[in-house]
Length: 65
Length: 65
DNA sequence: ATCATATGTAAAGCTTACTTAACATAAAGA
DNA sequence: TCTTTATGTTAAGTAAGCTTTACATATGAT
Image (cartoon, rainbow over all chains, first blue to last red; front, side):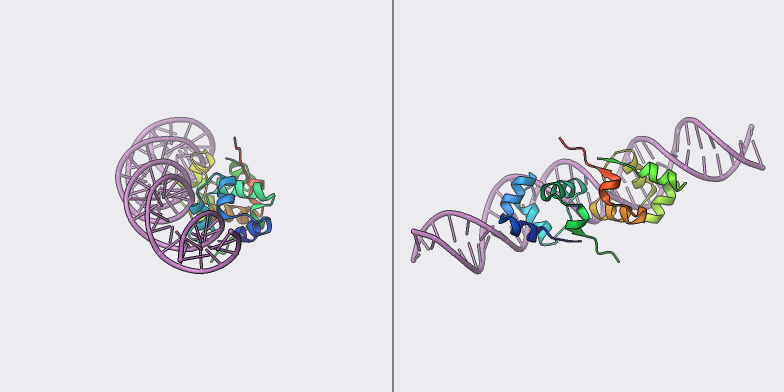
């Protein structure tokens, strides 16, 4: 699952720590999602979408087989 | 997290087992999601949305504090 | 050269999302 | 009445998402 977190974050000039705080998760979680270590849970994906005022599909792209 | 799975399924006259097969998950997983035991993972949410040709936000409603 | 900041990564532990197998119940049909 | 189908639920196990703590490295500012 690809995502545009890094770009959205850069547009706002936020650090991973800033984003983590806004999402109420750890910085490591933000980093892990950005670097593709794992996908966020659905509730966290909603929180991310709400924060950036976008649809989940505008932020995450499901690459399925 | 509320969801409209049961309704979408009813509109198509599908059983939980039918839906589970279409999603390639167990029937228990579909049941657990419908009965609110837990939320699907983000990849599964994408698969559900794709199957019903809807946005994730049209199927799942995040109820946050 | 030192210091602070941003990012990446890893380990250990907990919680949540899944699995299979199994059993209970209700409704519908033969 | 007996059987089948749909749904709900439980138990035990594995996998994935998250936490805190810690360390490494790179960059930029002083």
